[in-house]
Image 1 (spheres, rainbow, N blue to C red):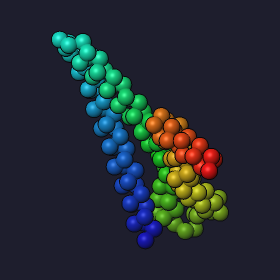
Image 2: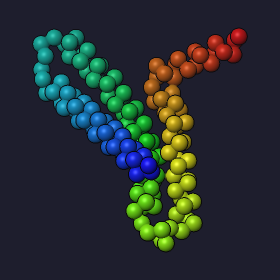
Image 3: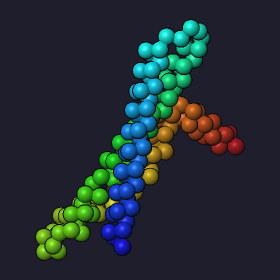
Length: 138
């Protein structure tokens, strides 16, 4: 059952990383197209540049979340694979403690995500502030 959990976790991390990378390269490609393409209407070009700038901000916010996920789940995946593929005689107390710590780190990712969303995404941060103000005023 642990191998199933490891495989599912690893698959999720790989799919997430692949998706983010594809989004990032699509953004770079689109940005290069807009910069190279001379448009007859200046307002249309300005709108396109502003849209790309907003999209770029969103992509970089997603990058922070992606890096946090890799940093939190990476140690668990590595240690779980080593722990389950090695001989039991090589498993030391330190490795078991490190594996337990990596569990905590993986669960910490769930607590870290809301903080990252509030820090990186202006609209989310504003809504959180509004919700806190409403709760404090009641």
